Image 1 (cartoon, helix red, strand yellow):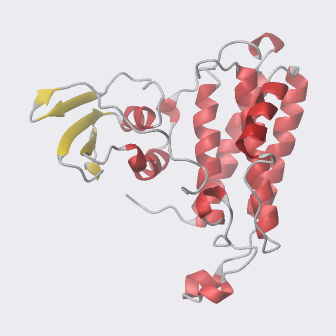
Image 2 (cartoon, helix red, strand yellow; image 1 turned 90 degrees about the vertical axis):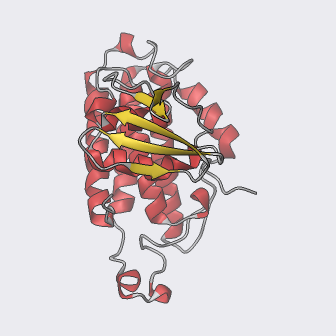
Length: 258
């Protein structure tokens, strides 16, 4: 799998934000309370969440630029949940306005990042505030981790809006990124050999029980992300016999483990 550079990630963030804005622009007022692809959530819930995570990640970068850190959500995850429930029922125009402001804020924060000359030259001391390697509270990581997180949120939740843009639209680089990030969902006693059609296999997990997951790359990525594969191509096998798809662990937490 090819590593994604910060410049490439920045371009992907802009494309993902444009896609979300475009989908929101096509919704009608009646679409907002209609079911999304996420159980128990309307499209309004998804729009409120995209707005919330965009503002949250922008805040991570704004504090990082000052050499400071702040929790991901104002009020923590309880604050996140309350904000989604409170804002989900907004009128469509309010959703669009809030979403566009949040996306612009997040993109502005990423666009303003200084070139990380220190990291590129191996001088860690020079890679300070305002760089892709400035520390943030999200997963105890750095700004680059926040960029990948926002990319995941925008692309996956664009499909969760349930408007016909499913996981079949996910790019190969995005799917390969999910293979790496979501390896944390493989139980410790298992090993998954991911076999996208027409591509080299990718092994995630280190356990003794080996299962081959084959199908279109987008279907494999959707399954790993806990979404319904849109092309119906997934097959699981162990010792050459067909088996059920294995159970996965929860999505990796957005806060460092205690």
